Image (cartoon, rainbow, N blue to C red):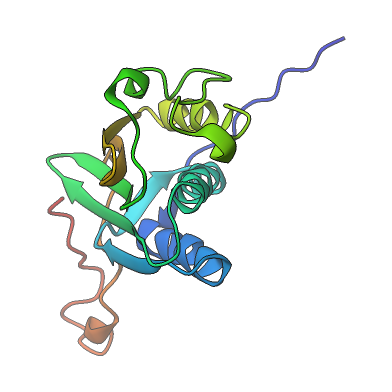
Length: 178
């Protein structure tokens, strides 16, 4: 008898903190020019799976860059979507390979000895689709690659402003102008 696994219910989590956690895990692993720019706030979704997707994207960025190259992670909300990008200044992906980067077992022609199993980006796409989003890629050979994850921003809110805690007239008020 096969038992089907029910996906966990979405939870609220601080996307900015998740991005910083991923970044701090990878900074000691590679001598890159690391950066982050996050202003997304609270997201409704599966933080463990999104973290796994970001880890995969950052791992690829490390794999396809060299010492001193730049890797950046950014997260913000734009017109009703959570937008998370992982970008690098590495070797890039040839245009003829871009369309197949999310295919299972697909590896690009420029990957050569840096190629992995071809499962990572397929897993990233599946994780993002399970969060009702999509992932896209833009790349220029010799200049780098940018992966962009877009998910609905339903349930987004700003981190509570703790500076208002002492003002009883402001209690219970939060910004939700996403």
